[in-house]
Image 1 (cartoon, rainbow over the protein chains, first blue to last red):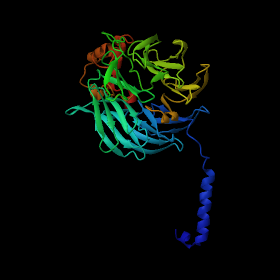
Image 2: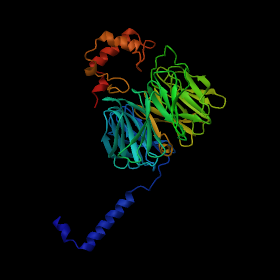
Image 3: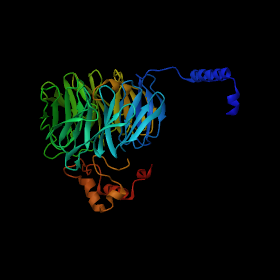
Image 4: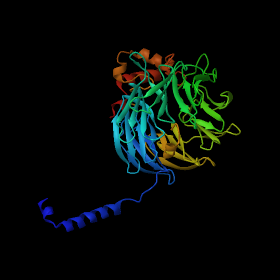
Length: 397
Length: 66
């Protein structure tokens, strides 16, 4: 230190300038985030950063805890991924630098989250303690805590959380048969609107791409709950009552996920619970207009971004298959077998390709949605959820 | 994977300590009415279920991972 102090000031300045220049020279050229994404490696608490143009893995971000059921939302600049871990940790990643920027152990058991329309608030839906917590998207500082208390001292597990226009989040209470909307216009004082007796055991939900309808799947009864959020006085009503879960429900080996909704044109494509069927619903009348027999119990029923195809994966024991439905003919055009234990599918922003994770095959397949040929496969240990930054621009994602 | 539960209860050795093996076997094969726990008898026989029950009580290897 003392020798440094004896250096002439001008020399010191020149030295530090050259250091800065050297640092700049080694910094990679700025890149965009539009073709980036992440893949959850569920067994080792790691997220892989991927590029959908080069179809490569760019690197890993380890140290994220229990990712056995994890989901991700993106900041609107597409540079930050918020990872919601099963163990209740919420982690903010910079996917360009591949660094953890913030992390909070916000609950004991968590199931996913959402980001507000303006990108300022991140909300987590929790099983334990049951409720929603809202965080500052920059710092992950707690902004609001919304316990899902439906009776004195009783907290419901929360599912189906989604963002709505304005500073609002909508979610379902599995144990209380309710749907709540939290308005965080004044973040410290969330205003709650509650819909009760919406149907038994809502297990997951979706918001239509326009933000107009919220649909909750019901585990405990035959049908779904629907709210028209554009109505002057929104109300919850049942749709598809008696679609066939039936008096003696079939065993459900894995809960379907509605979050990867499939609204294609004026039809919504939904997984039937227990049954080997995909249901087609007219989004004007909310009447069933068809059903398609499929290879197993559907888990994800996802529309290609243009709505021309719907892709379906399945619960055990049919989880090595993926089926592709042509939405015009309503025919299954292909049954693929990308690998054992298919857990998730994600379309590239414009849908020319789909990425499919096969947990037990330890690979992610990149498949051309036109030719249905596999373009490449990536080796990743126990891959599960795949999330691309194009989600940043979509409501309900 | 850590068997700490989610929509269902935890399946750690501690959580199951009070439950006899036959009760666990029955739950695995027949499910629990009114809950998301399905009966697995379409896919597993009693021997499979017994093995799973015993492993759960012992703690599957994965539970011990950090």
